[in-house]
Image 1 (cartoon, rainbow, N blue to C red):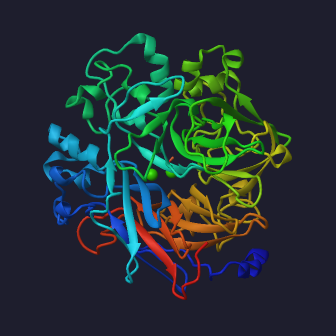
Image 2: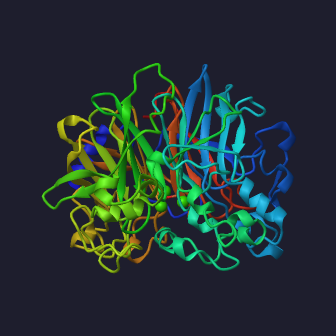
Length: 554
Ligand code: FEO
Ligand code: CA
Ligand code: CA
Ligand code: CA
């Protein structure tokens, strides 16, 4: 603990303590304010669409910022600042009339919920009062569960909608990647389902009742009527933020699973590499490598359509290997490998992980980091494919309440290599409660405790920003950890310090920066209380955070 606090002076802020209140806290010398909240208008006609009593009307629900903000990225397009932001899911009890008790009672109520999820593209500008949404910007756009998409790669289909948009990424050619995570929850069955599809449904958690009762009002979500509809979801989807009329593209070559985010880097020979986590207890980490290479100035040219999907195998001796998922290695057709990537991963004995959330790559050296958020099933029960989930190298604790961050260094400093070395950057834990491995790794102390690392992004200086989505009751295992938070980690020394705390009930997720790096945009999802308005419903929001002296933030 002594070492960590002494060396913390290397960080350009004084680390803050925990909080348990319904506010946001940032270090002294920094300030914040909301940028855009659930229900805020993107277009003039939607001004006043949100009311503290009733939320958003169905008529205006696709003209406002969606609920439960998650991954986001900023694009500088012709000198204008354009944000693409995911809205992962909705809280039906907050959105629907009280009489509904959180379950839609009509097709209109289903439409309302569909429209408040998906992706928002919006322009922001600082006209002297900090960043604000540019209402009526030609770039402003909503993409929902019903937007027409296209699909490419070996398993292409013609789909509608993108759903449960969790983490994000950017391409080297300036487009947005949105990642479909818990898509399974949107589907239900009103009648009998096809036995031949059962194994795939089971591995992905599809079946039973949908979480929003969509299937009762829209047959597209009823797997007894549309058995293949769930197979059109669970993909990395590319959106061109510069063209509001463009159809989003689902890239089947990147595999189908509960995608967290998509971190794109380049191999030494110019090929595209995309690292991806599958956020489920005991599922896998993947990477996609394009066949062709990319060079500066190229737009898209099929780089996300033609390539090889790999899955990670971690060995106990701190080495690892990316195993190619091909018809030869799996005995599956290429279409099945992509649609049922989890089953392909099991065929090659990929390493079962503690819920792989965001992956971030260090811009200053070839290394990747994945937040393994927690896993109560580790050492307790197998994954949905029956794979063994006993403790293993990067997942060393049974009944893992705290999570850890695994780091890999590809052979030869080349993200295109299939061999790597790995270590644990941090094991979260509580040294106040435990003296064993549940107390965390050496870089955890009473001053920086957290649980359930989730969002991650590197800044331009090579600092790793870590966001949490964990238990914030501040009791028992979690005593002394307070609300969910954002920390900054030094990749070289392993030091980690706390930068921000979020309102009780919320998680912190999504981080990007203004082009000049003077403002960080941070997402606050599912807040409690009446944050940030101080009265009425709680509203998920993206906030701006800046340094009062005008210096850069990362
Ligand atoms: Fe949507 Fe795994 O977080
Ligand atoms: Ca997450
Ligand atoms: Ca999470
Ligand atoms: Ca979430």
